[in-house]
Length: 95
Image (cartoon, rainbow, N blue to C red):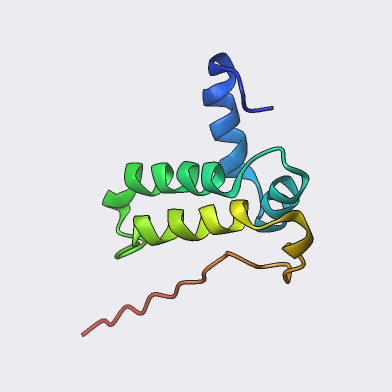
């Protein structure tokens, strides 16, 4: 699904449109690796950093966790539905 260079742009756009549940389904089915998915999200984060929607992301840690998901043996992939997804919150104070 994501193997050819001619499809890279459309594949990246498609990945960004997935809900978290859809992404997990694709990762579980093997149509994309967790590392590739995380890389596409990080690429989008870098391109939109000027919006200041997220103050900081440890990109190395994100990719490290994605690789650990990919490296786990198939029999060990009995995680909850949100395994590997981190949540973030942002507090804005107006004075």
